[in-house]
Amino acid sequence: MTRSRTPGSATSMREANRARIVDAVKRYGGLTQVELASATGVSTATVSTIVRELLAAGVVETHSTSRSGRRATRVTMARQLGLVAGVQVGPRTLRVALSDLALDVVADQSMPLPLDHRVDTTLDRAALLVADLLEQVGADDDELLALGLALPAPVDGATGELALRGAMRGWEDTELATMLSRRIERPVHGDKDANLGAIAEHDLGAARGRRDVAYVRIGHTTTAGLLLDGNLHRGRGGTAGEIGHVQVDPSGPVCRCGNRGCLDTVVSAPALLGLLRASHGDLTLKDLLLRAADGDPGCRRVLSDAGRAVGRVVGDLATTLGPEAVVVGGELAGAGDVLLEPLREAVASRAVRTTHGPVPVLAGELGERAEILGALALARRQTQIELTQGGTTS
Image 1: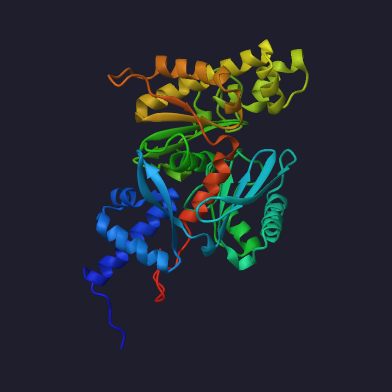
Image 2: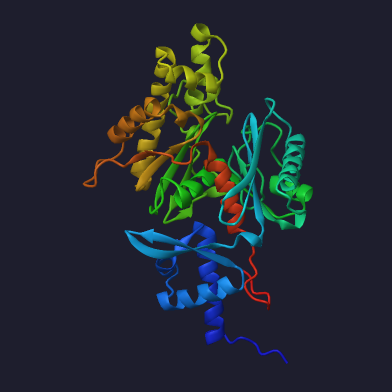
């Protein structure tokens, strides 16, 4: 006869503490035992005991490190537990990566996509690239635990479909994560790329240690991922943070969303490159950044104006949400201070002035890797890890 675990019993409490500790390590990638105690509310002594049990069971690994000049033990997920995959679908690029549960990338690959690429063809390519990477690292298919999918548009968490019509032509009314899951026969979890960039910069980059953060992604379009009290705020239908559709010019051109004069009609890739076509010919975003870095005055002017336009919208966002920091990522963040300084000035002049000074506007530390790392982090967070021989999972 199997004895049931009474709620509140010592056994159920220990299992709950084990699950909290594993969830914290999965969420943050690696924490010292003192940090684990702070993150979980479990006593340091109990953390030490549970970490030893998890280490013996092969669930976690420990590494010597230092904090504030003192020796400490850092706890990470065990590498032999399996792999997670990340897929980032962009307007013109597909990127796939594999990592262990410590988010150490073991293989990644990118490929260009045609304009207005088809959903079925793109997901077929993504599934093939995942299989290729598994073969490259000598891993079996069953070693892949889950996949995170980053998309350049808001995702409705209830349906798994894109939440805005016109964001990706031909991709509407499709359960994208489900479609890719059928192709790779593994769980797939999808979200907007800016949300995943926010997770990555929070866990691994410029937003570490901050609870309320706006991650602003400026690239082919402009969007934001919002972390409130350390958790993603997705809003109705996943559309929170869609600052590219804030109106900046009531008489401006019609946006793909159907409204007039949205920020995306001013700062999107077609808008910026269109400003330079008469003087510079047909450029790509990469061309724009390279020429700006070489001192081209026209390219630098376009980028500084873009930073100023985004900063005015972000300043209003900062007044509304009061974030501890704004982190800027995306392709155009590669312009550095040419874009960031006008953006900072606009945020400082637009946002409400407080006794704490202007909200910090920080360059993302992860660069072009932010969204793919966020996709891997999402897959890791959603992965079920076996904790005991009895099958308790987290």
